[in-house]
Amino acid sequence: MGYREALKRGMGYKESEINEACVNILTETDEYPLSFIEFETRDFLGIKTTREDFTEGFVVLNKKYIVSISIVYQNDIIIKTDEEENVSYR
Image 1 (cartoon, rainbow, N blue to C red):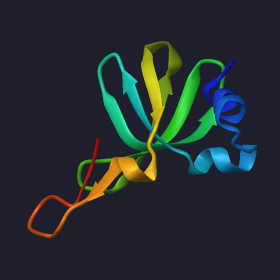
Image 2 (image 1 turned 30 degrees about the horizontal axis):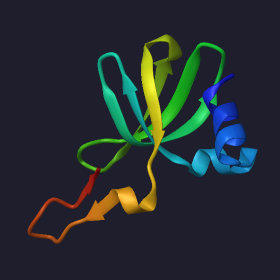
Image 3 (image 1 turned 60 degrees about the vertical axis):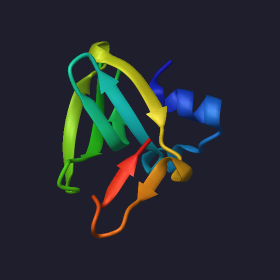
Image 4 (image 1 turned 180 degrees about the vertical axis):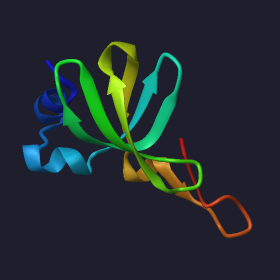
C-alpha cells in the first residue's frame, strides 16, 4: 500500500483532498516539514516542501529512504509574533 492509499484508508481522505494534507516526512538523511504530496509511484514520492525561508520547493524522494510520514494538524502549528521567528511546529 502506498502513502496516498494509507491516507485514504486510514484518515478517510478523498483522492482530491490528499494534495491538501500537510505532512512531515523524515528520510534517512533529511527532514521535510510542512510538505504536501503531489504524486506517488511505486518507487518515488513527489512533494512540495516548505524551506527554511518559507518558500516552496519540489522534491522527488526515493521511497526506500523514507523513515516516517506524519500528518501536521492545525493545532501542531504555532504562529509567533514578529519579534520571534514566524512559524514553528511541534
